[in-house]
Length: 135
Image (cartoon, rainbow, N blue to C red; front, top):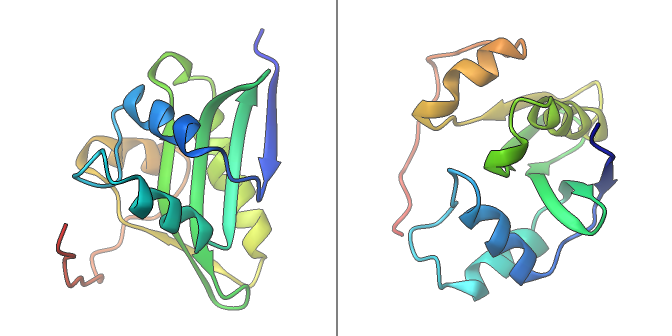
């Protein structure tokens, strides 16, 4: 049985973040060596939820919220060997809980995660638009 501890607003060391991204099927930016950008992404977020087994970072969610109307869940990541244990769902639910009941939770899913979000009860919408970033 896993002994997982969830923490709110604890930003892991950059090395822990990169290790987690490398051990999952998710890396949020194209240039995996751009540590300054990864550091800035987390320092400028206002909701970070992490999952730990002992001192090992095994999952995280990162979001931006106004705590009144909407919360954008930007990143959700779980180590490959820990998937299918409910960790991702718990990270999403803790993010939603931290944002507050007034907030809707919005995200852009990678194609391989669409089924996951449907399975945890999120509604698929087709009314979103984007100006894509320059990597």
